[in-house]
Amino acid sequence: MARMPIIAGNWKMNKTPDEAVAFVRELTPMISHSDDVERVVAPTFLALAAVAAELRGSPVKIAAQDAHWESSGAFTSQVSVSMLAPLVDYVIIGHSECRAFLNETDENVNRKAQAVLAAGLKPIIAVGESLEQNEAGETVPFVRSQVRTALAGLAPKDMNNLVIAYEPIWAIGTGRSASGEIADDIIKTAVRDTVAELYGVDAAAAVRIQYGGSVKPENMEEFMAQPNIDGALVGGASLVADDFAALVEIASRVKGRRSASA
Ligand code: 13P
Image (cartoon, rainbow, N blue to C red; front, side, top):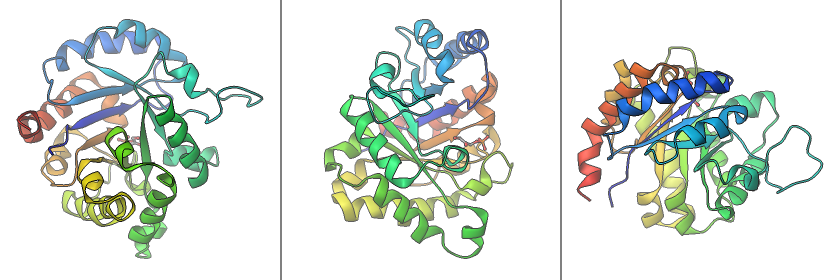
């Protein structure tokens, strides 16, 4: 089964609601023809409602950047999946910045994955090793353990409705990306093979896995040409409409037709 490529722009703490709306107004016509690629933007919580109103009827989908696993209660600062459900299709969880600044744990990522799926939304689960772990040769066991805990207790069919983003922390916002071949190797051995061990080869063949970390138009083709890489989770380049459109264009050219003919 061919996997539909997915390009998601994680805007992090960028763009006011007005700026976010102006941006999608500019971006949407540039990427609306690439129906063989799933196109997703992830504004801040504050901009979600305005962006959702602007994108109503558009092929461009929306992700939240986080969600709490409880539906309501005494959780100051948090937003629940049920609050997000009318506005978004995807929820990014486990981003390394949340792990670093908000003490996100693998166990909470798992709670969030379950809540997101139960609400009929799709989690984009981010995993990835630090520079120290990478240099110590710990990447594969570490990422495997992140994946195992994040996916604990899910069903094989859930693998059709979630995305895993492999984002080496040392490549995020640094301009220093993994090579396509190395990223593909880690994605295969640490992510796809782990899904196969947990949920079987069919689930592993179906799950979509993105690379993230300093993805830009200049290196996108190298990533998209890899057999195990199904798209990108993009920070900086997703804030520039021309770059976002170029990433979608490259994904469509390299993988789109194959996916559309499946
Ligand atoms: P950059 O593309 O800016 O390196 O960010 C990657 C990222 O963290 C996406 O979630």
